[in-house]
Image (cartoon, rainbow, N blue to C red; front, side, top):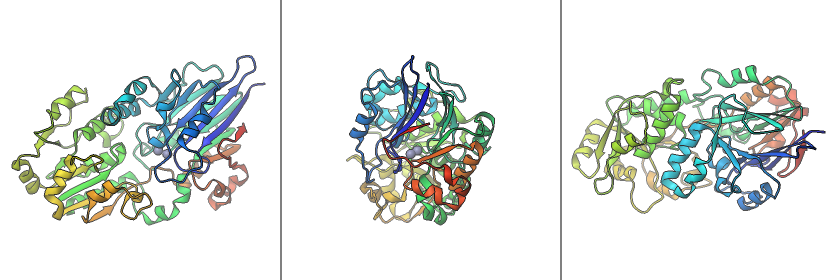
Length: 447
Ligand SMILES: [Zn+2]
Ligand SMILES: [Zn+2]
């Protein structure tokens, strides 16, 4: 008898650091096993299973046909260098390019592993599997090029959401709801859904900014009001990065470093045709240090990035550039520094510290007194006034309810959540209260 089982190795009761597996058994052909995500624990989280233990549990000697990464966040892909050699790995094509750029700056040893990753094609089943039909569909998330996976095996149908949301740029045309309607039949056997925001109700209610559009609109007001703007945002949170880019007033300089510009250009090349927000905008100014930097514009050209955006270098050692910034004002995507030597954001900040304003678009836990205070961020921010401006990368509970309604699953397994037990008691989920099945890490569920 063919069979299908789900195991969440880590993530039934925590946000991030997740890994799951689906195993399709076929007596004659033997088992076919895919692992979905292999994430590193988020810093500062109290966890039951260490990263090393997780890798031991997942690769326990049984064959693994592939590791499927839903997206490039470290809490999903962070342990990729621990995968046994020769195992097939998959990720989205743009996610792969961006991961490669990040690795060029931070972890060059991992480049061959990234290069070896195979890539998804939206709506196209993955090739080379005997017992499983696995179809990736792109979803909206705070990382670009994220996927949910639809798996058919042993006569069963499983939807695995990965991290998703319905309020970013990718879902502006209701992509998620259309994909569910067109490709996922109603009445599937199992839904594995993320539930990050169930434990962040206060955070959601306190934040007037819900969508990426809201974020862009507020950014436009802030950038108009202040002359010298620094923005702290994750370099790969591209919906927000692009909102900030287009929200910069035309008469102010838009500044970011060459790394951030490369990430933006890569995303623009992949998405510009479909999403207006990902189209080229005003000129991008690249700060350079004459003592260190080679020609940045030339470097960007060599990466093959589409240069339909104009670039200009700002020579930081010369007084002219600083004078120009002082006169025109600017919006600079800044980066906190983990290294001894000051980075370009810090050099610019030194000139404008007393008149600067910071738009803070990262997790508030990193701030002074936060649960995971980051000394580099705290140092960069100093006493400079700031406003928190961010949207969540995760689905609001009402969107999870809409997803459940759309696919009408027999069993619902929550993961990537601190509130797995609470799903069944929430008013919002009352129509499906009996269908939730809370697993423990490592428990096997026969679908
Ligand atoms: Zn995550
Ligand atoms: Zn994520």
